[in-house]
Length: 193
Image (cartoon, rainbow, N blue to C red):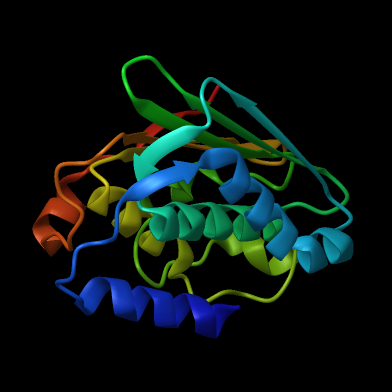
C-alpha cells in the first residue's frame, strides 16, 4: 500500500500533464473505493457506511477523486478498529462536491493537527493501531485537492473521532501541479468541538 501511494505521489507531483476531466458517477467511485479496501475492512473489523445526496454525476477527475477517497479511507481503517467509518457525499446546487470521511477511531492529538498534511509526518497515535506509515498519504490528498481547486478541513477529538471534509468545485479551472508556495499557503480549518 505504501509503495503504491509513493508511486502515485511521484507521478502526480512531477508531471505537467493536466488530469483528465470527465463526467464521474460519485456513487460508483465510492463503491469502488469501499470494494478495494475490503481486506482492510475485514482485518480492522470496521463497518463502512456510504450515504449520498443530490445528483450523482459530477464533472471532475475520476482518478484524483478515487485517489483522495482511497487515501482517506485507508487512514480511517488504520486509526479505527472494530468501529464505524462513514462516507457521506453530496453535490449541491452551486456545483460543489462535498466528501466527508468520518471514523470512530483514535482521533488526532490537538498538538499534531497543524502538521498532519506535512510530507513525512506520521502521527504519534498511529503506532498504537498498526505499522507506521511513510507520512505521505495526507500530503498527497491535500496536493490532489489543490489540483482540483478544492479544500480540506479536519475535525477531530482524540479518543473519539476524526472527520475529513473535502470540497471540490465542478469543472475546476486548473487541474495541474501547483507551486510549493501555494500548497503551503493553504490553511487547515479545525474544529475541536
